[in-house]
View 1 (cartoon, rainbow, N blue to C red):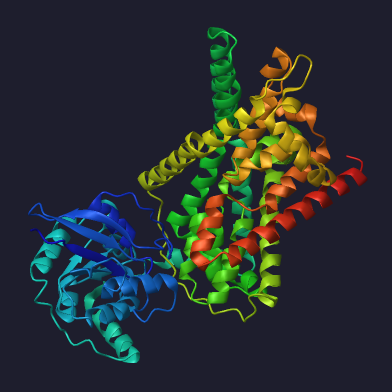
View 2 (tube, rainbow, N blue to C red):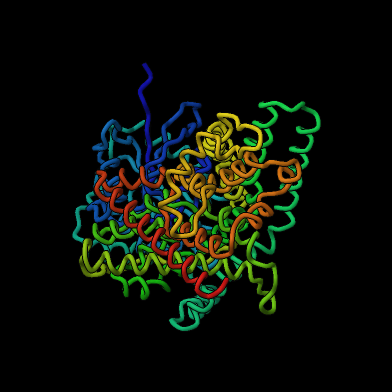
Length: 615
């Protein structure tokens, strides 16, 4: 029987393990130019030169096997073979950043101390050369006592040699070397310094441009202004760049609905297709361009190395509310989706810091909220300019994101002073080098996000929309009766209405909020389906969602709806991952309760204030 062969990638954060994993296995795991991307072990298949398969495991980055954070615990247990249901890797592939040898060699000695078959991948050798370093891999190999292969994972350089070295080490899995690396930490640091100096043949000053950029971007006064300006441009672009594409998608769904209506006779099936599927799902898919533009900017921040620098800039603000800059990356990741953002908190070693970050992550405005914001802003905020290149719609969107951030910081301050009381922990993070984003990586990232969004539209959103359409369509209304009044959904809306009426919400909004717990985008499809089913004339049915909202909602109601979504809990997936990361229902229940409370309170304040101001 063929034995199960395994190998594992280990190394410091930001050493390029995930990029090497993708190159060796053909996977499309997320890679980024900042630490903490891999938050749990990933597995793929590596094919040896002999044609035999090896299970390759990509482990979270670690600075030590003496684990200080949950992600380091995963790495330590996996390397030692103590993960439940997992076998101990036969070969360790130690990934080192070629331009940051001294620091990475400290952890390398700790791995070599295990006395296990090990191959070193001296990765990102091209960036080391760009920075003016000429390295001698043979000298490093002699010092470490294991094979050292120079690689450039993103360009697939050195992969054949690395695979051959893995095969050679794997065939001698029972003859593990024992290089006697049993040293104290100060001794390891001294040894790392000596080995790094011996491996560097020459050094030039090409890195001065990067140093100049850091002096500008990390300046305590200029740096935050640049970050603020970057984010401001990003939210302006979400509206300005996406409009032609969104209009084209909207026209396509409108034409499809008209075609189905003209080709099919009046029937419940035609209503299901036009009012349920096309009107519901189409109203969400139309916002795909806005989401992709948002992710384009986030991917550029990640790939260029600016993301980690933004974390350093935010450290001072984070310290003011009892957190550290380590919380910034999980929170910024939550702008994409709170689920990976909450999982990324595993890199935070302090338990109270980590719990606080988990509890405030849903206040970051995830991409699922973008369709909700976009449709309400498009309906009620004029597409006018308020300054050179500054659109009012983009300004309002930016304000909503800022409101979420401010809400998160205030919540963190209160939590750190009460339930998660404690001093802010220190913040140390390795600065990645600046890189030009690779077009292929950005394109893959955008494609993956588009696929996830469209899959949600075809599964969760479609299912919720169909269920709502059934509740809205039965029983059938009598002549002269509103379909909403006659339907099961109408009865549900009547039960919710007294609770939501004080904050300006109507029955249609109440119906949209319930399925929106499955996915935030469902609120848009639910509104589109509700108004489509309740249309009494063909002219009403032909009107788009924005026109129907303008006719049915007041401006105070629209503003209160936006305020609700700034604070309301996110999807069920977020609640589920919070339960998993906190090992119980206590904190997810608390999170849902306080977020619903904030949503109701601020929606009410917004509505009452708008009424008082005469809107």
